[in-house]
Length: 547
Image 1 (cartoon, rainbow, N blue to C red):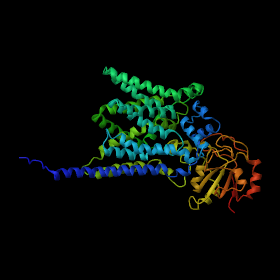
Image 2 (cartoon, rainbow, N blue to C red):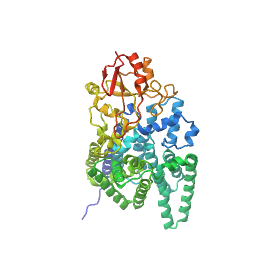
Image 3 (cartoon, helix red, strand yellow):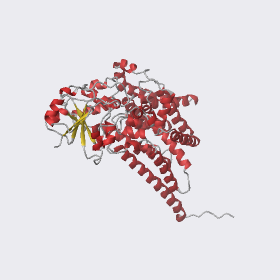
Image 4 (cartoon, rainbow, N blue to C red):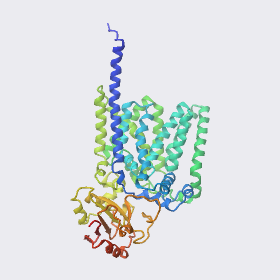
């Protein structure tokens, strides 16, 4: 005869206690994940030098009114709302690198904070904790949280929009609808490439409503669609109409090959190594299968958005989409959901009655993915060029031209001597410079000398340049890591120890070299003020700023 189950407060307290302990373990992993993600996103953020596309917005705001910014797209995408924000900083408290990085940092941290709560309806705490740590260490999400571009913001906004739409579809609550419209419009205003992902829910749910002949739901979809379309038209119609030629000129100029798609998908998985990428996608497929068994509509909803959205973006033909990083950043809305299914799969793999062992195993898998990923290669201090394409173009060095095509000639001996000093103990001013990774060897040099770098702007001392520079008298520019050589000649040193003048540009992954400021006209003035150089070779001339 089977004994009757125990009853009473004590019997009930034991399971409750075990449930509390289990929650405590996974909550601890959740906290560790957030801290790790915050550290990765904040580490060295204060010393990052703006590079490549981060300059699009600066070039635009310096020569445009707010109305011009709002009503134009420009050939080089500068992201309208971000540029407006930067311009307001410039016209009020001053525009600095830190001010430009804040939106991306806040969005990166915001995804770690709001994601677990938004997922609580359909995913258990262990899955949410594992998802958070995978998001925390995702190289693509970490990188975009550290640069002044819109992709960290769009990754958060599209994630919220897609989940908010489903919440509205299930419950028909006005608050969810408002959240969806707001996040979709803001994401589309930041970058229109997000719209294939945020508008696809209408297609998925519309098909469902038509198949079920649910007229009421279909009418509700039409109403929400009209509200979304109207809000998008308010912010996107003026610049698209005015700059239609620019907009269409960029279409059809690129082509994403199968190899580009393959390399981009590896980047979404956070690796450049095929077996690791296969593992991530395999556990994600396993996790999707488990979700499909438990909640099939959710599984098909997210899969449709991710797969069809990827196909639309990959076939869009926009310029530069043949580059893995460009395609990967356009597909960044997929990353949180890919990692969500991966987290579901990992939890199934590490399931054990001893919940603390499951948490430890999930954490160990994440730690292993981090250790063999690209971030450790960027971690050294100081690294002021986290955004340089030698780190970000492709996570496999063999497929990254900014690594594979770098000239093998030795760096100047002066840098090697600096490398013998403690890292970060010396500050250099390097001039002139180019903002493109193609021609920017300063990151390579920093690998050797491990000292801090400021950029010396040659305008107006050695001529006037408006690409990667700005006038010395430009009000509101408060860049910490950009200084004008003209100020050096007036006696300001900006806390630097040496001025290093480069005779010409050094190719990193492009040919031929770009035009280089002709310094012959201003070198006599520099030597007259700073004295004889302390080092000179055929590439650099070094002046001591502290006698």
